[in-house]
Image (cartoon, rainbow, N blue to C red):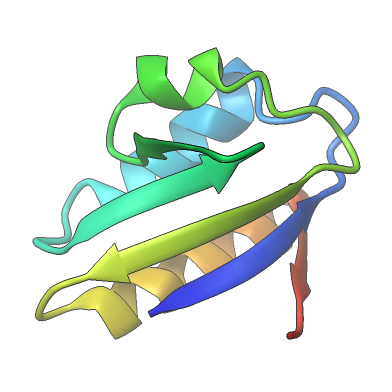
Length: 91
């Protein structure tokens, strides 16, 4: 299960936005990946997310697998939208 987002924050997914996302997904049991430019990293890894160098205007896919995947993706969407990091891209 996955959701696609366009990152709109001026600094892209730099330290603060990455920390917000990693903190939001860490309590969940599901596996969660952030895919950008064909490369996937664990969204629970702050270094992995920052190493992606996601810039403003970029499209990222967040995919989750596990018992609480749906709840996890809802939380990611809530954080991205409420914190002004980006917007959901509807398929």
